[in-house]
Length: 342
Ligand SMILES: [Zn+2]
View 1 (cartoon, protein in one colour):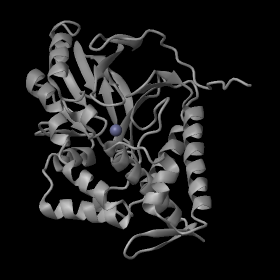
View 2: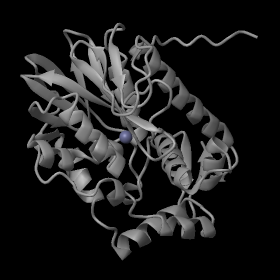
View 3: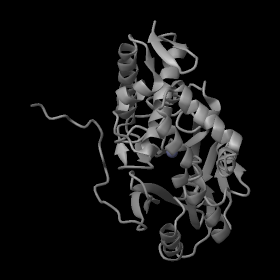
């Protein structure tokens, strides 16, 4: 049997421990922090900046991460000033510790405006009306009643990991740049995984801090959410991959999960192909009219945990909305969505 060759190159072979920074490019350090779900860890970044440090992404809020940060700030960072806290997007493992870090260090938080507003929105408890709308979304997608009732009980987790949204922020402008240690980092703002996700690209060094926008070994979640059920995030996400595939092939990518890698063009192509395959699979599957839930099972199987079921539903819906927008599928609306290939 032919062995599959990984087209990516991983220039850093050391595996860092939690809370122990590892240099991955001159004056740029990977800080691995724990997160309490399947992904296991997030990579945060410490960059030397004007006699101090800039932090990119903050970590998932937990007692363990608070203790690790205290050790890093006083130990590795030697209590030197923190100049900036940059947050790529509003997901809890990225923004969870931002306000704690701002309170502790006095540094300003930099985010895109959309991500700042999304964090504030996500920190609100759902109203009864919103909970009802969410259940309606699952019902129309054809989820069994008992699953919907289980999902209904699982709301509000965001606040456990992001106890406080940033109180104030400085805006990262789309297509702008930010100076870190006298070097210009170009800001690339994308949508699809999160609506205003920021990547930072250092053209001189050919280094990309990619957040969750492109990851080496897993595909980022692309989901339709209950409060914007006709959205087409997959179109945005595929566009972002096309843009990233234009970066220099020598670019060193610093992702939020997994290993530092070289091969952004190949990785973007593999991810685009993966989504195209799923789209083709659904196109064939819907030759017979199908509910959304049948499509979830076709794509992801029928043994999903509750957490994965909600992600898989959003992801299946993203693919189905994309195909409907392309006029590949038709959708009949009442009472449960049914999808049929045109
Ligand atoms: Zn994310």
